[in-house]
Length: 413
Image 1 (spheres, rainbow, N blue to C red):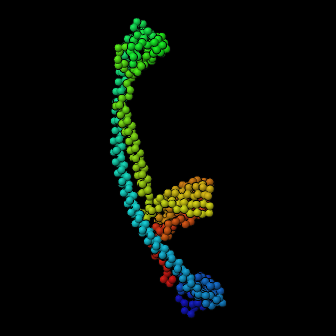
Image 2: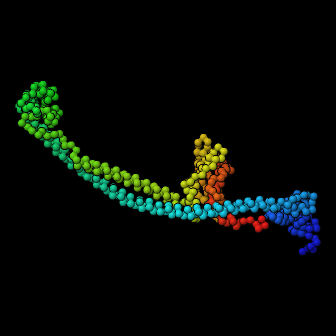
Image 3: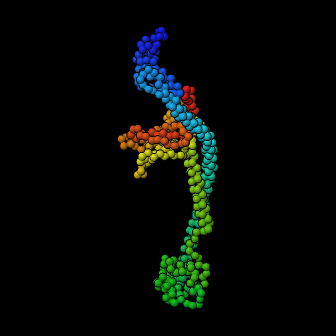
């Protein structure tokens, strides 16, 4: 307690300097600038009446030669305009954010419905796949069965043909010497269209493959082949010489076509099943990402934002990656989506993208993206404060926080 007349008497009576707010007598004294129309604040008492205007209302130079003008109103007007613009931006940003939240909720529900549909489709395809596999196995079994039956028929035909060849050979071998001669051919073989005309010796030799006589083995590849065609010569008084081996029957062809069709159908179902499972996996990965408490950041998924800084073009694809592309066309990864890294009160304030391409001095490139409030979504700035460590300013309405409005503007503004 000191007498009032000792206040501002240019002598420091109180240790905290509170008795000399309007003089420079106390080293730790403070002078209060009222600054009506702007923002009030304190200055050290040593600056009072020092010839320099520290308070915008000029109250600190009440007893000096300085000619200070009151600039508080102009300063306050500029700050009021700035704050008003910030408040309008915030209000508009919050309005847009609410729209994006509503869209995010709808989009989330659509993604969930799409996932359920894909899972149901996968279940249906799984049933169809099992059915197709059974049908393919059954078709292959029938094909093998038909082929086996045909093979058995071929074997029987082959045995019958061998017997027939031997019988005809013996029929033509009149003297039973184990060979057929030109004379024996002339005696037993006639023309199909003129049985009365005898074969000449040259014609008979031609039927024997140019030989005067042939054994059973050569008979199979010369005269026998000609007789089975039945279009030029035949054996006198013998009809219906059998054809060669049994050809592929219609039932074998049908079984083969059925097996091929079942295999093709199974492949299509397998491809469809694989595609659906890939879509399910991709969608589950997307839905596993933290898109905010109200899914307000969901609209950023699948979007990319570019910014050109000098000779580089930077691309931010939220929840995916960050890249840097030079004018030469070389593209470098600056990080893959990692996590949210904001403070506990606002964890959605920062994104971290890690494990980019290796840096020449060791380690890998990484990017920290700070989200700021704005009325549009855009990449605003990119900096590299340290080698291979990048920071980005990403503006978007969903970064606007209602708590900012509490900071407001002082009533005296």
